[in-house]
Each structure stands twice: as C-alpha cells, then as structure tokens.
Length: 430
Image (cartoon, rainbow, N blue to C red):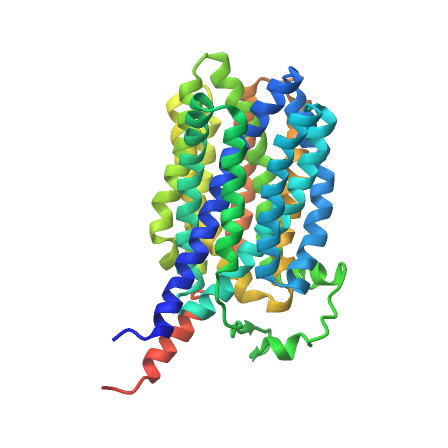
C-alpha cells in the first residue's frame, strides 16, 4: 500500500522534471527567436554575433559569482530566482520594444540581464539532482538520464515549435510564451519539497562524510571553491573534456555546418542535422541511467560515439555523412551528460556542488569563442572542408588521451550503485 511519504517522493521527481522541461523548452524557443528578432530590428546580419560576443565576458563573471550563490543561498532558491530573472528579461524585450524601440545597445543590455538568470540557473538545476535523488529514492543516474531525455526532446521540439509560433503569431506573443515557460519553471521548482541531502563523497583514504570534510561556515568563498573542485582528478578530467569538446565542436556547429548547407542551398538538411543530434541524445538517454552506474564503461562508450561522430562530420562535403555524424555525436551526448552529473555529485563535497557545476558553465563561455576565433583565422587559408577534417583529427588525438586517463581515474561502479548492492545484500530475508 502506498504511503503519503512515498507518494510525495514520487511526485518530487515529476515536479523537478516538469520544471526542467519548461526551462529547457523556453531556452530552446528563445534560441531561435532571439537571433531572428535581433536581425529583424537591426537589419544587420552580423548583429547577432556582435551581441553574443558582448554578452560572453559578463557571462563568464556570472558563472563565477553564480556558482558561489548556488552554494551560499541554496540550489533551490537560486534555481527559482534564475528562472524568474530569465522570464523578466524576455518581458523586458517586449516592454522596451514598445516604449523605446529595440537597438543594438538594448539587445546587449537585456542579453546580459538574461545571462544573469541563465548561467547560475543551469548550475543550480544540475546541482539539484542530488537533492531530488535524496528525497525521492531514485538514483542520480536515473534522474540524470530522464533529464537528458527531456533535453533531447526540447532540443528537437523547441526550434520546430518556435518556427510554427513565429509563422502564426506576432513575435511579441511568441516572446510572452517564452517568458511564460521560464516563470512556470520557477513555480514548479518552488513547489519542490526536498529533504536534506545525505550523500557521501569518496576520499583518498577510506570515506569521509561531507560534514567532516567541509565545516558549516563555508571556508570556500571566492576562488577557493573552484580550486577545491578542481583539486579532484575526476573533476579535472571532466573539465578538460568540456574544454576540448567546446573548442572543437562550436566552430563546426556555428560556422562549418551552416556554411556548407547554405552553400548548397539546403536549409532543410541543415535542420535535419540538428534534429539528428537531438534524436541521438534521446536514444541513448533511455539507457543512460543504467549505464552511468558503470562510469568507466560509460566514459569509453561515450568517447567512442563522439570520435565516430566527429569522423563522419569530418566528411562535411557529403550531407548524409554530416547528418549521421551529428546523430552519432548525439548518442555520445546522451551518455556523457548524465555521467558528468553522477560523477560531480559523487566526487565533490555538497557545499561546493554549485561551484563545481559552474566550472563547466565558465568553460563553455571561454572555449567556444576561442575555437570560433581560431577557426575564423584558419579559414583565411583553408576551406571549410579542410578545417572539418582537421577538427576530426584533433578530436581523435584528444579522445585517445581522454579514454586512457578515464580508465585510470574512473571507478568501475558508481558509489550509489555499490551502496544499493550492499543494502540488498544486508536486507533480511522475508
């Protein structure tokens, strides 16, 4: 017979996933509406890139301060406030356009305001997985897998929904819908009923509780929290993987892929390639929860998918190869993203979990632009097809090192799966 507590615990997961789905859907729609609106209001094809570049540096700062806020104010409050700020930033677009008219300066100001919400919010939502797991009894790997599946659905459905809405409704109404998604996500997060996390972290010698490792007064203010997070070899491995992946993938997605399909006048195939990535993520997210409980195998499988995907994407001149490469890369993302959540949750102290996830937010703000700048310089001397081959080759070399290092550092079984096995072994027979 189901007790009220067990019902509440089951509902915790659904409330969290509903909040995550609404937030991701809103961001996915905004990712299509925003550059379209910038181009429509400014008439400058380069305006969207200029606005994105202007927001990059403030976003890096928000990643730093946001991680500290997540750990000092709490993961749930920061997640709520972040979604509210994101929603209000979209409403600000509507209001400013009505009163003053949107120009480049306003897009940059409002874009920075939106980053204040988006950057800390992503770290807070990822860090919340441990609390949802502790409350619901579901494993971090399971929740991360379901979350990854929703991410794939949002990535697939969001752009299509945005296109339909922009075709049938005035863009102001589409913006209201986008803001509504963020505000609804905040409401769902506010409805979460969480118990304090009881997770433990592994130590070099035996095991140590979080309370023993990090005292209540939080001595990890400023850069100390990030330094502590990066003192763990597994965190450094994940950070290096994110750095290399972002630096090599962003040029492909933002420059090479659209340039090729625009050159052959096939926008439909360009859309199909992006959809293929989402489908790949959704496919592996079905088993990601189980696979992430075997970190060493999940790491190797994810790296193999990424390498095969990059190899196919290197054949950019062949459309089917590029599309297949995106799909295979999506398979890798469906494995690696939940694995990252599991490893961070089990590796670092709970008191710096928000700052640990914010490390990856900061990396994304640095590595992507660096890769784009480097690619732009190389394209002065090479074709997009030559650059695609070079990127695939560079990733293959990096992947070999990452696989070897992962085999050295990662456990065969995750801590929570081992704990679950031990609990079953100790349970008295009925």
